[in-house]
Length: 390
Ligand code: SF4
Image (cartoon, rainbow, N blue to C red; front, side):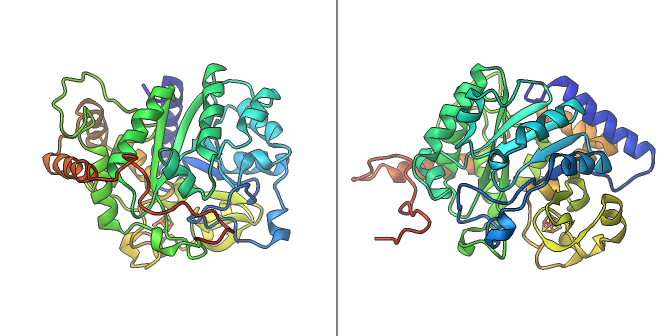
């Protein structure tokens, strides 16, 4: 089971309570950004292009605790920026765990080993270290624009797993992602002993440096169908596997949505974002104003202007985790049909797809040409931010 039963129970009872109270718009996960600065400068990131005086600012622990209690969501994800750069992150995490919030501390793990050795965190069912990894070594280092990052992250993850921490990975896939390489990456990550993996397509941030890297909706579905189908073996082999080879720390219905097997509308209030500017409208990705309080965010945001059906061009191709995972979780608990679909997704986990298997097999065959030295090497050269390409 990728998520502990106590966490599943907490989420299930919370969602049912919201529905019994007649609340159709409720937060599921608070995205708490205590700072925006980072020790990486990834090409697909839309968070780090602020001027230096903004990047120096950070939330105090008390501001974090107040936001958590205002929002009331049972889970808190701490992205950034890089949260381990925050001088009070230990106090923030301890305070949230003491409040019995399920905390996902998102990190690129460059500083994780150092912080674990310094005794900054204590293993708890409430604390998950969610390590950002975008693929196998060369793919990840390419995506984050710095060599050596994958090795450092994996080293820190091994230490964290040895020490009894809950460890997951979070992976963002962009245009040009290689489905065979992503599947090989999943195999490698599961061998490390992580609790589960989280996936999302990237969002086309207006501020991001590499605008050509973002996936459009149909390509997103085709890519995820190739990656997430045939979960019982390699595309060329028959398999009598009794268990899924991969565990995911997210809703199976959200994964079906990514594969194009079901459709959802965005629920941007499901994962509200609080950061140094306030409560961000309307979602984690768009910045169309800020509210001073969570109540003001919910009351004053023109929610009907967002999501695919609204016709808003900024939402047309968006399928990201922070917009749609809460929609999938809500579907699970909204009706018997949703619950049955979730159970079916967990039981019928193979997702046999002959077309996807054939494409993967063809791709593998084409790689075996002369001069191929690394089976899953990225298809472009590694470019470090700030350094000229040869
Ligand atoms: S679809 Fe939802 S998550 Fe995506 S940009 Fe629009 S409001 Fe934000």
